[in-house]
Image 1 (cartoon, helix red, strand yellow):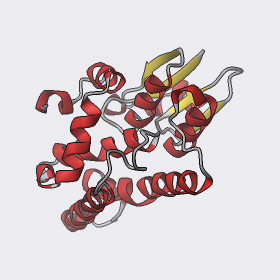
Image 2: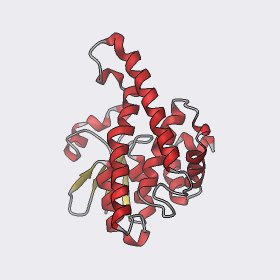
Image 3: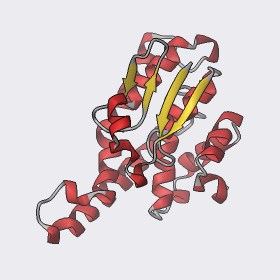
Length: 212
């Protein structure tokens, strides 16, 4: 059985939702970042980088990083139709997930973990400010990407959509005016109507449900 290591509210929510959408049997393993469980000796045997998510597949192999996990789940559960079927859309999906991972997520990290980006304790406020500006620009871009679409890739719900929901939740967490982003907010509402999404958000006690 698949085993998912995740921390509620973290980017691992993308893999958590996708796994639920896939219909696969799996064991959810909360690995709480606030309690430092991602740095425990036990978890470091699963993922030596000390990051979530991690997906342990049949046979004991471990896949890390959302982009890899989401791609694996989409391709190994074709009946769920979570993976694009044509090469161009597939490439666009991978490109979007890579952008989420290497640009959107790091801009939020500047806000929440500014000490990682400056050795000067007096410089953390400037790091946070720059991160907030960048993150807001990134979620505005996601809003533009959703223009005229139900889902990130168009008419088909794919593995990219749970990943996009993560950043809406993060924006709301830091009190950005997310409701000003009409396309993104409508997307969030569509996501909340999906049973698999609601099940995961309830399991993670997500503020997105409380605000709905």
